[in-house]
Image (tube, rainbow, N blue to C red; front, side, top):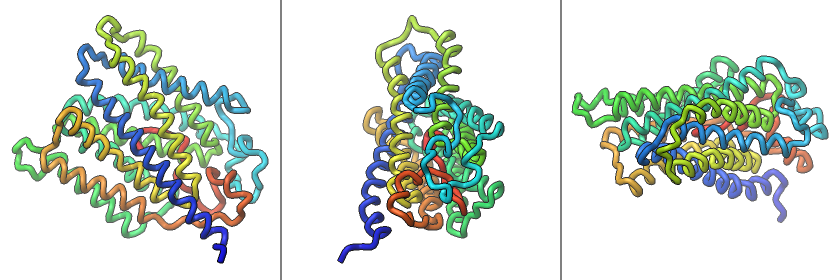
Amino acid sequence: PTQPYPVAMAASGLPVAILWSTIACFLFGVQNYAIAYTNSLPGDDFCRTVGLLWFFTGVCGLGALARHPLHRIFFSEAEAKPGLAESLIAPEAGTVTLLSKTATLGGGLAIGMAQLFMKLSFGADPDAEGPLASVICADVILVSVLCHFVYHEYLNAAQWGSVALVFAGLITMAGVFDGGGGTSVSPVAFSLAFAAMISFGASIFSVRVAAVGGIAASSGFIARTLILGAFSVPLLIAARWDSSSVLGILIPSSCGFMQAAGVYSINEALSAGPYTSISIAIFGSNSLVVLLLAAIVEGHVPALSALVGMALTASGCVIISLAAPPEAPPEDEGLEEMSSSLPRKGGNRYSTGGFGAA
């Protein structure tokens, strides 16, 4: 017998969500490792590497702006999709507030700071790139706790348990239990990775603030990428170009495009159906890609305590996503596709108008 619509959609959409989430996990993992790899290149210049990353991220934003029919930076979901049934759109989706614009631009700068801290962190302890990436990926925990208190999106018992698990992983990687033997992650590298995690968390939380303020996900993406592109200019002017190599230019430039492709993959995964928790759990595990690439390409193997801490942190990030309340399936086949990325009446989910380490 033919399956009812929601069941049939769930059966067909899950492989698509898993596929795009896996692609996003790979892209963000490769990007994070590539940023770390630039530290080992002869003649690497910090301003040049970060400037190129931000510049080509901005190029992607210019492309998105040129392709969008409204041809402006800030617009609401109602303006982006005027044909959508009014009953599906939350009241805030029709207007754009000053706070949401400020939060969006601030979120773009926070992303840039996170990438800056991430590069410095990987350079401070190259052998611990995988564990450091798992620290950075713990931003989902920070955002979940903030939303619990600010937007009353309450965590359940299992999710609070995952917060404790991540906390235990961070303490283990910080070397509290290694007896001072120097087998943990470098304190400097850990501090920088923690700063990157805070910055990425702030950028993701700004997406939530912007969504409440009415900014469309595509508008947020354009604004964040463009502000990074603008701030790349002084870095590129200050950069040293006499020591640049082909790889030193090609790798950070490619990272900007990989970042945009990763965000596109996340959007595709989340629009495949009610699989937000599974998708976040998959693409949020990109620290494993960093760990494998660092071990295979450069032979960087972390200490045992760092690996244990990484396992605890990554497990906590997966659990907090999988333990989220299930999403309701779409009620109308004709409305499912165009309503998948909008803020709904009766609750909100993570938006992907932002980008980062995921």
